Amino acid sequence: MTLGRGGEEYGTHTLKEWFNPKGVYACEQKSILMLSVLAGLDGVIAPLDKA
Image 1 (cartoon, rainbow, N blue to C red):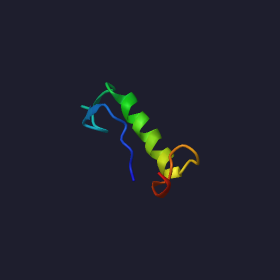
Image 2 (image 1 turned 30 degrees about the horizontal axis):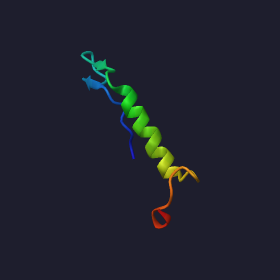
Image 3 (image 1 turned 90 degrees about the vertical axis):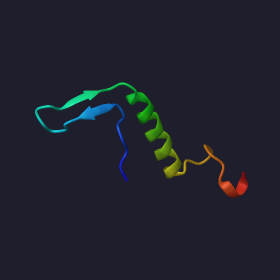
Image 4 (image 1 turned 120 degrees about the vertical axis):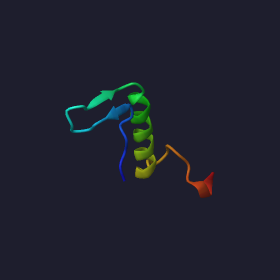
């Protein structure tokens, strides 16, 4: 699985590479939320069978 970093980019690892960090914070928030769900933190989200 890979988690994106958000923003816009072009030409990765070339002399024409650039990166615009606009919106990066939203991607980080989604990544943390997904990792929390995958980790199964007890008491954060009710299991589907007990909802």
